Image (cartoon, rainbow, N blue to C red; front, side, top):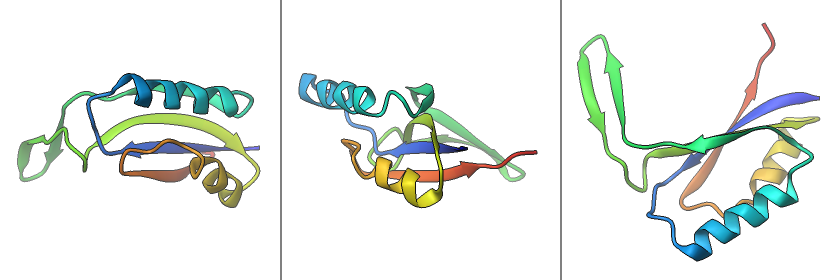
Amino acid sequence: MKKFVFLSVGYQTPTRDIGDAWMKWFASIKDRIVDGGSPFGPGMEITSAGVRTLPHDKGAIAGYTIIKAESMEEAVKLARTCPIITGMRVYEAMSM
């Protein structure tokens, strides 16, 4: 199986309902989870032009999860079941 990184897009202060929905989702994909990940706090972006504070809002990368799946299509199908705030980005973790 291949590994895929799910990046949750969109921060919102969690309510009990949001937390419960996420825990239910994690339970539903538990056999696919490689790394349950973590939520992210505020961040910084470093470029050759300098450093800037990233907003912690609905456009922020809010956390990650690493799962295993046979294909990108299967990973996307799993991501579509997630109780997303704004969106979910899916990337294949390529072998080196």
